[in-house]
Image 1 (cartoon, rainbow, N blue to C red):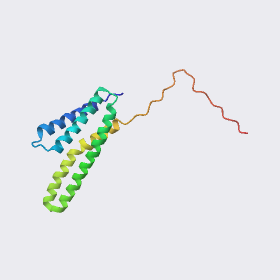
Image 2: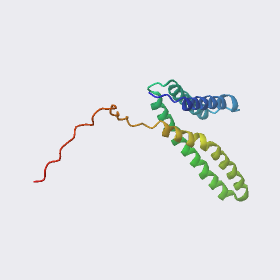
Image 3: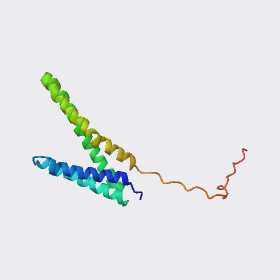
Image 4: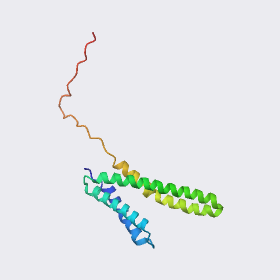
Length: 150
C-alpha cells in the first residue's frame, strides 16, 4: 500500500481545523452542526491517519470520505447559489446585498467542500497493476507462425 503523506497531513489538518471551528469558535451549540461537523472531522481524521501510516484501509476510507464530502459540498454550494438568486430577485437592492454575502460564503466553501475532495478522489483513484518488464537479455516471447493461405 502506498503512503500519501501530504494528502494524509491535509486530511488531519482539516479534521483538527473543523473540530476547533465547531467546538471552540462557534458561539452557540446546535446539534445538527455539532454532530454532523464532528462526524465529518472524525472521518477526515481516520482517512488522514490511514494515509499517513500507509495502512491498507487508508485509501479506501479516503475515497469514501472524499466522495461523501464532495456530494455534500456540491449540494450545499448549489443550495446557497439558488438561495442567493432567490433573495436577489425577491428583495431588489437589499436582496442583492444579501445575495452577495451568500455568494461570498459559497466561494469560501468551494475549495474545501468541492476542490479538496475532487483532488483527493483523483489522487486516490485505483491504479492498474503494472506489467512486468522482460529481463534484460532474455528472448522475447514465443513467436507464432501465421498459417499459410491455401
